[in-house]
Length: 358
Image (cartoon, rainbow, N blue to C red):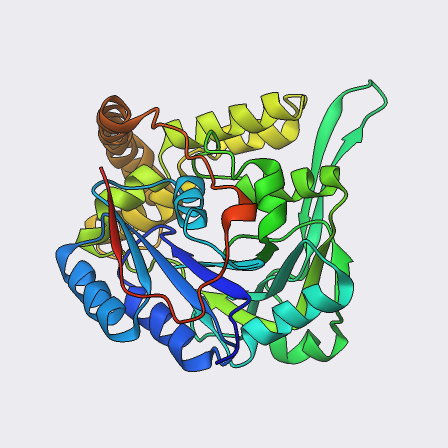
């Protein structure tokens, strides 16, 4: 058996109701030898049963938490079990395509890239609408001497069929964590992922930190994957989704990003503050608005119901959930990654183990 050079680490993104489709796509479309570490952040019992059965049958490692996890916390937990030169992070709502991992590894091997991202698509049907095809992530100095964040995503919303032939492997500044291949040594150099970034812009922070180390980020369009956003939201996903996209977590993440990189509180941040909670309004509240208004698509009526009735109630509930979580679980003890020199890959496939995180 060829020695695996890659560990795939699957982590929760915003829900658990697409776990089966995502994991089955990894099994079906990954032909390159790999190890699999699955981080399960307090999924519903039915999902836990499915994952346990798959782990026992396919012999991969499970890390299970008894509470919900922020994305960077989940990645750091996964990294404690990585013993290979490369790690491929995949969110649990992502569908990969044939050859996805081979293309990412080939790019890293041929270019020396520290990070490689695929042509990332969004929505159903899969692999048709582009979410991300490389981008920009850097700090610029304005005429007043202020540090400002430049973030831009390329090709978003375009049809894959119309532009894929034009896309080429190229250096870029940005790669999202929906699906990303990273050299393990780079993560070790950075001391792991910044857990003070609870729910947003962690990919921006990471890519800028990699560039600061002198590492390169590449976009590889021969690798294709799609993330499938929550729609409609299942009842069993509601609590995690509200925490994952909570106002408190987003405010802390933006504050950490601004402080860490000495950024001015400019229009970029002001717009983020103004739009706070937009995912919850779109995914949770808007279906209720449509039900209460009998499906009448009238903007004024929808705004009255949304902001006059539902949003204030939802914000109070959101604050209660995040406050309760913070009292029980935050701050969590830091995760210290093992020394890379102690990591020697096993000569066989990973045995099924379950590590419970209290």
